[in-house]
Image (cartoon, rainbow, N blue to C red; front, top):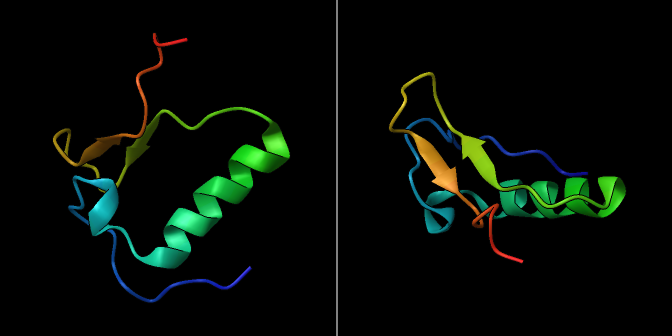
Length: 57
């Protein structure tokens, strides 16, 4: 898969991520057959993205 050179550091929304990051996450979901619910974009606690609510059906 193509990589990305843009930093994801500090991204706090799905829209702030580079397009290839989104494609990568979607591919991981396909291969594992599991949804990604949370992404961390830095060591900072606030720099996380809730992709989907893990408690929704």
